[in-house]
Image 1 (cartoon, helix red, strand yellow):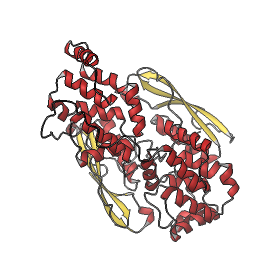
Image 2: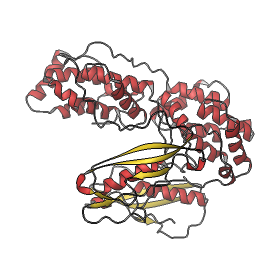
Image 3: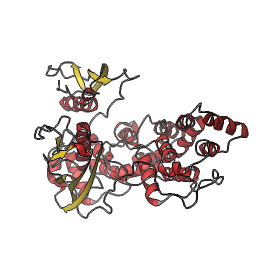
Image 4: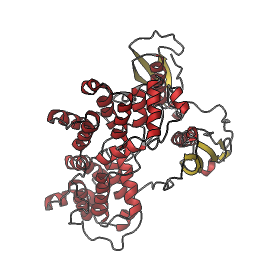
Length: 493
């Protein structure tokens, strides 16, 4: 039994799942019980596990583990949802041009560069007002950023930003791993500064990315409109709410790519509802179609044809000769199973972008879409029109669209940021005008005289403040429907 005492509860669950599945258990279930605490350092970290760390476990089809976790405040209403069953064995960021020979000779048993679950031993313990810079050299770039932000925020920094610069390389084993960092590992950071900005130099195969990642804005754009609108816009949003790609289109594509046929009506309806409801991610659907579907199994594809099908499904193209050979050799040699190969493809940026196009969660753990979905752009454009009364500027639109696509922000997060942002506050709208814009944004209509007088009266009499009214509108059935139409997670205020 792995020792996860003191780990973050999510990392503990992942560690247990990886270790026991690698050892031979087919199904590993991890449940949580919570004990209240007042110490922020203990919040959501493992206090105890059952079985105890080090206990010898007999390999079986399934096992259930219980973790006791410190939790500030009351016990959550339900335990965290089940973590992915296995970390990806490799995280390609684009269609692989070749799988290095050493990859095909030994199948990794877990993620090559997982986020450390404990502080690195070479990180000095901070003393006085200083904190040591974490060492992320050699880590996957995404994991490196996560570690720096988590370590320094836990230490007391309020604002931690990490930017990347890229250097070309030809060695696949170095692709997208940290080569250098600033400040240097172990450097003393003055805690009283409250903010810190780190730069990580990353190896990148071939040419530099087309664009270096930029710091995302933390709130709605602050650019003032040339003229403050005097009333809520009455014209329709410039981007219509009609989806350009639907959940059913995503499922139709899976049937075509994996099974080589048009979807039957009942199957298409079932799987469309699964992804629309969020019960399954795009990756989970692909796993079923390619690894579990009786129809696919009956096709009895050779390793060559199987890999070609993966390229078509996950990359929307034919396989390149070198890349295909690497994956086929890995399967034929027994160094990687077909399931492990599928996990690699799910972790690609191309798959994330395909899922984003249809408004579907990709299921990838370490990568995100780099292209915003058209529906997310339309939703964000609508906010600029309805809330601020102006057209969106490109930088702000791209930020919100991509954040909504990658589920980093919900519909309510975005609306709250717009209505409480510097630009909207600067408009100094009356209570009546505020209510009109709420109706336009959340309900897609203008209020009746009775509705306008009621809500404006609540604000004028001080019975409710603007944020509380905003929360009421955010939980409305109408706004839930609007978010669903655009494929956006609604969230709450």
